[in-house]
Length: 107
Length: 122
Image (cartoon, rainbow over all chains, first blue to last red; front, side):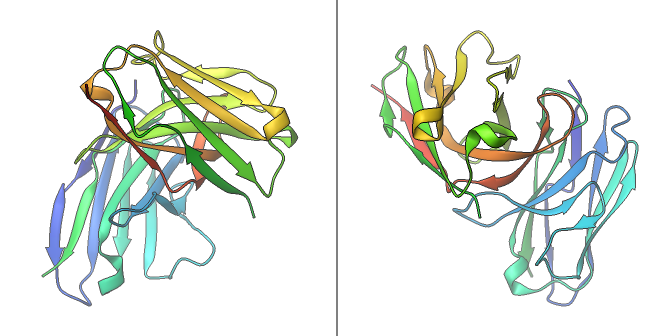
C-alpha cells in the first residue's frame, strides 16, 4: 500500500495568513494526487485534482504543487470559511489511500 | 448534475451484516464511471472501502476484502455495500460516490453523497 504522510496534523492561523500543508507519498505517484476539503458534518469536497488543478468554482487562493512523492497545498490568504480539515489522497494505485488530515483553525 | 444518497440502518449489531444502498440520480450508472464507498470512523480519517465499475467489476480494500461486497442494481440505478461480521471498529460515517477515473478500479471521489452514520452496537 502507498502510505500518505500529511503534516501538520493541525494548525492555527490568522485571517489573511498564508497556510501550507504537506503530503508525502511512500512511493512515486506522479501527479495522481487529490486535495479534499471537509467541513464539519459534511462530505469531502475536491479542491485540487491532479496535484495542481483547481476545481471549478474553488477560490483562487487555493493552490497545489508537486509531483512524484512530495506535494504541497497552499491557502494564500486564509479566510474564515476555510475552516475545515484537508486531506490528500493518492489514486495512482489500489488501495486508494488518504493522508491523516490537517485541521485548519482560525487563531 | 449527478446526485447520490446513502440509505440503510443506522444501527447494526456486532457479528451481523451492514447493508447500505446508494441511490443515484442525474446520471445512469450503466453509462460509465466507477462507483465506490469510503468511510470515516469517529474522529478519524478517511478509508477507501471499494469500487465497482459500471460493467460490474469490483475492487476492494485488502483490509476488508474478505468481508465486503459491492454490487450494482441497474433497475434502481443504485449500488450497494455489504460488510459482513461487523464489529465496533466498523462504526463510521459511510459515503458513496462517483469516482473520477484514474487507473483500473482507481480514481477519486468527485461526487459524494452526504454520508450516513452507522453504529455497531448491541
